[in-house]
Image (cartoon, rainbow over all chains, first blue to last red; front, side, top):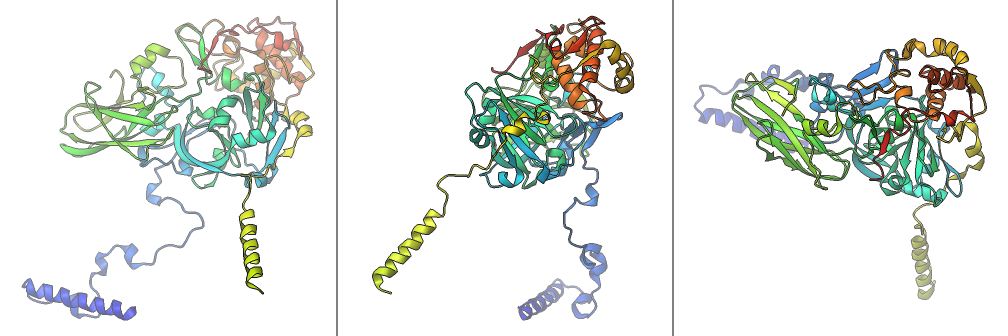
Length: 420
Length: 176
């Protein structure tokens, strides 16, 4: 083994020397006939000095320190707020666990797993409790899906376009592979009474967040998730257990789940009446608007970046998702919506999950308005802001899914604009 | 060992290994929780009909003092216009150009107010208020917009009867 390496190195040196001679150089390269290598100074430091130690839990490169969740919390109550996934800094479709968006109502509880149980009671034949040890023995499923806060992109309702980076205006959505026990199994073990129509989910945080969920969804594709992207849930994402309801707004995906009480009627909790309802211009409000409808966003190029080469070829790239199923089409316009071209969808295109799209664009230095428009497999087409505002008014606050427009100036700067 | 007995024993081994796979996918491991289910700490949610309300009582006059001490810091002395969500005022504003979603203008059930104060407020010390204090705070907030009279003592019987101004303001989108 060693011999062959030495031999091949000699052959390489001979050939290199020969090559130099054939090319008509005056003398052989110095390194070819010297014991001391002269070129190492031209190699980067990390090739000449042994690298760093192993780590028990890896961290991103220190050169990526700007890739962070942007925290927006109430200064008077720092546990009440959100943090945004930096969608503009990420590629692919999986959100790293440390960058998954957060919405906390009163901080991140530090739950001791062996002191936490899930109680299933109410309209069941026998109330049951499950601890972590027993849940680990149930069959589990894995599923990649997005979770999006009902309040994501709500700055879009404002009269003036917010000049925030893509993720810091639209990043209350993230996409992960969740692994856990299908809720159907646990509910059926408790025995569902025929009168049960809803379940009141309650979290074990310092807001004891409670919200009503249709039983139909829990029996369909809901999961009691224990793992996120292969590792145990992060505390900020519900450790040790949370609900995952693919395609339904974040508030229903209750973190730190402690109880599911089956009922015949919704409980009308604070977060299904005063919040996560959408006020319409006539003063009435839409309630139980669970599904996150189709949406897309160009993440690159986007605000905060600029186009350095004029002319130049740029990869328009972004994300599309729908709470009703798979994304079937994403179109891109560079002229404010007059003309549309189909983007390439990067597979696998998964149900209720992020789909990455892209399209190369030859920019000639002209003023441009970049937009993406998603269509899902039900035929639903992402609306323009004008249509959304016409249908819902300006005070809905939740479920803003309109087309986002990035203005490219002739200098290559990027701004967020309305009116296209 | 004869050929026959060898055959039998190897067959038995095969059968045993087949049988070691589970007939059903999982073993039910939920623990009976009838008693747990009845305990107060597992009965936090209060329904619009008042199911789950604890015994107790309180008036706006009592609530006013608690409000000043426990709530005004974040919600403002008038219960509106501070860092926390607005609570009082703006009844009838929902269809206007500048709607304000306060407890009194927007929330459809008074039971939700009791439920939410008890489980989540004050934000620095949830579950620190007594049932009487939560009734008193509810009475204070609701009386500020005349939803209940100033001298009403709220309790588990009459709280669910409170008619909120926006009781019928919601359109259920689910089921579609």
